[in-house]
Every structure is written in C-alpha cells, then in structure tokens.
Length: 306
Image (cartoon, rainbow, N blue to C red; front, side, top):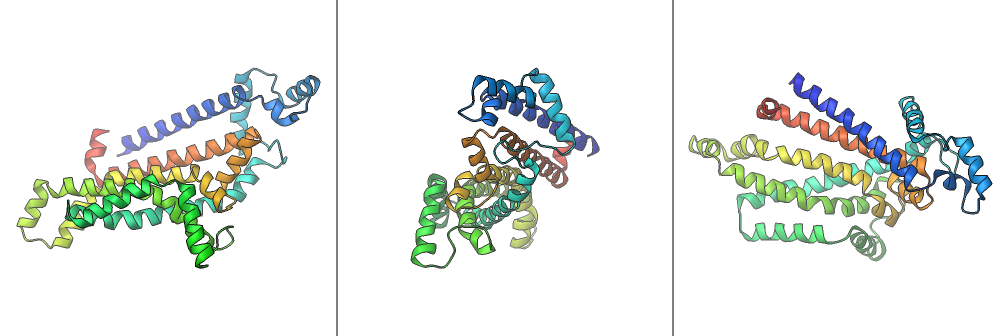
C-alpha cells in the first residue's frame, strides 16, 4: 500500500509541474501580457516600459522560475485589472463555487445511485427504459437552457426559489439541479452497468444460494464492487463542476471562480487565469488521488496491480 501511495503522489507532483509549465507558456505565447497590462490604446513605448517593469522582456524560462518561486510562497501575483492579489480574489470566489459543486454532485449521486441500482435489478423493464431515457435527456439538454427553464418555472411562474445571487442556501438550489443534471446520466449508466455485471458473477450466485438476505447481497457484496469505477468518475465530475460552472454561474449570477474566469478571459487578465487553471488542476489531481486511494483500500487487487 505504501508503494502504491508513493507512486500516486509522485505522479501527482509531476502532473502539477507539467500543467504549470503548459499554462504559463500558453498564457505568454497566445497573448502579450504587456498589452493586457497597458491596455488597447498603449503605444510601443508604453508596451516597452511595461515589459521592463514586469520583467516580460526576460527569457521565458527565467519568468517561469520566478513564477514558481512565488507560487511556492503562496504569491499568485496581482490582477492586471483590479490590482488586487490573486489569492484574495480566489478566496472570495472559491466558497460559492465549492458549495455549488458539492450540492450538484450530491444531487447527481442522489438520483443516479437509486436509479442505477433499480434499473440493474430489472433490466429491459419499464423502469430501466425510463431511467435510460432520463439519462439521455439529461445529457442532451444544454446547461444554459435547463437553467433558464428552471428559472421560468420555479422562479418566475411559481415563485418558490430565488433566481439569482448566492446570499442564501436557497439561491443554490436551481443552479445545483442545473449543474448536477448533466453529471447524473453518466453516473447512473455506470452504476447500472456495474451492477448488472456484478450480479452475474459466481460469488453473487453463491451468496444467493447460501440463503443470504437480498439486501445483504446487494449492498454488502454487489454494490461494493460495482461502486469502484463510480468513485473515480465522481471525482472527475466534481472537478468538472468546479471548472465547468462558468455558464451556470453566469445564468444565475453567482460570483464564483467560473464567473471570475469568464471575466478574466474576456479582459486577458493572465495572472488570474493562470491561478484559476492551476487551482482547478490541483483539485482534479487531489480528487483523483483520493479516489485511487479509496479504490485501493476497497479492492486489494488494485494495490497488487500497482
């Protein structure tokens, strides 16, 4: 187990450095950072002065080394637009996005788990077809359209829930349903497929032949093995919700990092974009690492294969 953990940690550190190199390089090659600081009306002399002031005229490898040294000290730079420290901007926006992503993944799992298990117990039944149809519809509807429909129905016509802002927990209900409905179909199909495969194995037939309670067979033996790939997918989906919440946050006017990323990209605020990409990447890596460790704890075969 220790060797497995060390290998996963080493891989995570390597991926972090690779992402930081790619992000830093693209942000300096795709867009002139001096133009982002000086503005559209800047002259050549203004651009030259900005490059000298911020060190943009130094070799890229030197700039990257300085950037990594600052990141290691917790300094992500300052926003070109507001002049605020990037860490301050992220600290203000992360809680809203984290709450939205957490509620969304809970909503997705709350639907996917029972639907997937019930569909697997009765394959090709009416319940199974309804669950698969719901999955197809949920995957096909764009987030912005689903969000607008929920606003019109529950916010405008019925008046049950607020339609914008993030001041109370009620403000997150409609955004969480919108974002979670896109992740639910993949989770539900994976649970269904995993349960169908596990229920056909010899050890499940043996458990049934021994007269074990149906609930014990399903939840103690079958679901424990079927849930392993779902754990990994849940980690990936949670990371996607953190990074892919731009549209949902824009529709519901939630001041999270998704909306901050959209604002920064539209104004070429590169320090903020780099920090957001690095943060989301770290979340992905940490979640994937935790999912791998949890799977290894649940299934000794994974530790042996590693």
